[in-house]
Length: 86
View 1 (cartoon, rainbow, N blue to C red):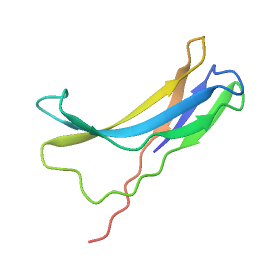
View 2: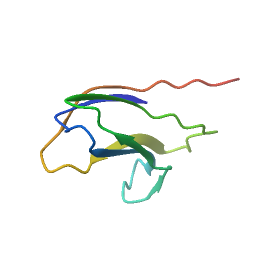
View 3: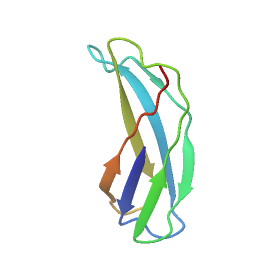
């Protein structure tokens, strides 16, 4: 998964993780590992890679970002790609 984050001052910690949630009850979830990034300035590009085997039936994958700065930030672009073997 990749994202572009704007409005985060250089040196600010940004954290990302993937979360697998149940479709019928999003309060039930499994969180993936947290990856830390440090903002490089007004625009920071992040790439979060996670090896996984399956997404369970009746579940979805979500991508979460948090930045630890004082001002509001914005995700200006994002994408996800899945590569798999049959």
